[in-house]
Image (cartoon, rainbow, N blue to C red; front, top):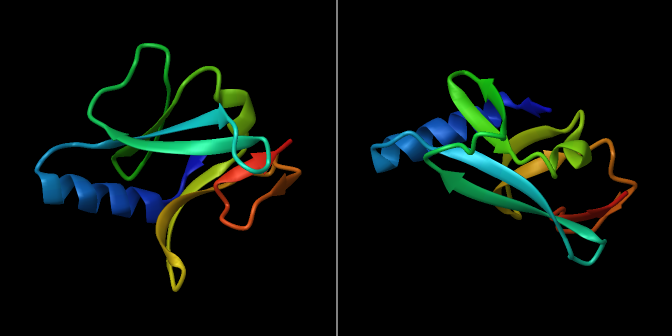
Length: 105
């Protein structure tokens, strides 16, 4: 898994605005219109068993259960007409919904 520079820049900006170091926790949960869905959360601390991936001094955390679903994925931040959000570019997903939040394998 890779944390894109766009996501690292956004995390740095969010942390600076709040005056604290923030990490992005990404998890895969059952549900959503395609079977699985991504969950994003800003946190200050990691769990002992988290996968910890860094880019430009910023970090993304993934729990052990979600790691296989995110193998070779890229976590990025996009700011487009449809909105600004963290996204997962996941080569393991066989299909995904239009919003990009849920996927199937």
